[in-house]
Image 1: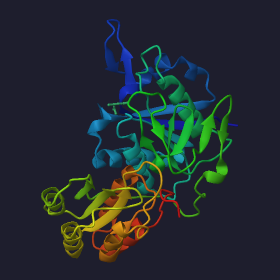
Image 2 (image 1 turned 60 degrees about the vertical axis):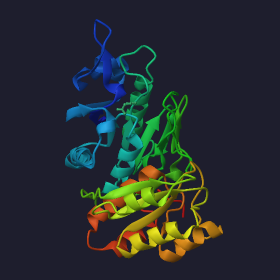
Image 3 (image 1 turned 180 degrees about the vertical axis):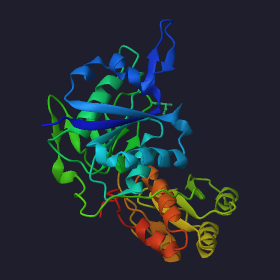
Image 4 (image 1 turned 45 degrees about the vertical axis):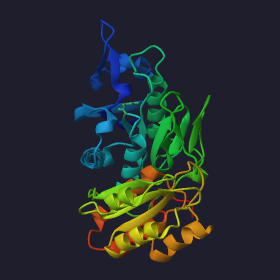
Length: 338
Ligand code: ASP
């Protein structure tokens, strides 16, 4: 039997740093991955790699780069059994969410990973993360038709993940969906939690509309800030980060501002500020007016998934806002509990 094949797409981030002889950290060229992780020489799968034209700190990630990553995977889709994307942790959950919406009918694993300490440092968590991500992407034990994040022993659904710590090695969490696999002595896959295997061919969506905003509520927020966001030139959609199970100020000025925006065709999506749990429109009086005027409840979606899904749907259906509204209230890739 031939070895399984994995393609690494290297984008940058802390993981790709090695120390030179003077002790300073530099991004490493991927062809040196075997020097950085010598254990890979004895692995039972074949690895190839592609590096983005410029290696970035993931704070510089953009929708155009999501398209570049997606095209690398699309162009190599039939030649590999799985894909590993090395990525900075800061925006990894956004990229994982965006890729999940871009790849419709995905039947192979795309596993993002990175690290809190550079590969070139003695205590780096990067070696373990890369090795496990490659094992997951190449395994014959389970086929994972999903975009995932592997970090510190857990495989998470990408569009359910959030970076929760700038300090700890367990930097990611999936608050509203269990992990898809856990690495201990063995990697245990929880196949009943995977998305179903598609029956249709792969499609890759490549259009994003970035004319969107996130409006986070806080006690004391006033009409100046709310109106400034809602009247931003060209705005097509806004995610409001509300309190608890989707509650917001009940003052007339607030509801009127949202109502006017919705009447201008702006899509308003309600996502909770809480890490766990869901928006439940009309559970409290404080969300009834929003429901009445057409604010869409987004259930237990993460903020990363909500904003990337909105950009992707607006980009894909620029002339069909009603379709975008309906799809935002539904789970497309397992990002909302239904
Ligand atoms: N700033 C880095 C990045 O996101 C942090 C990391 O990789 O962990 O690219």
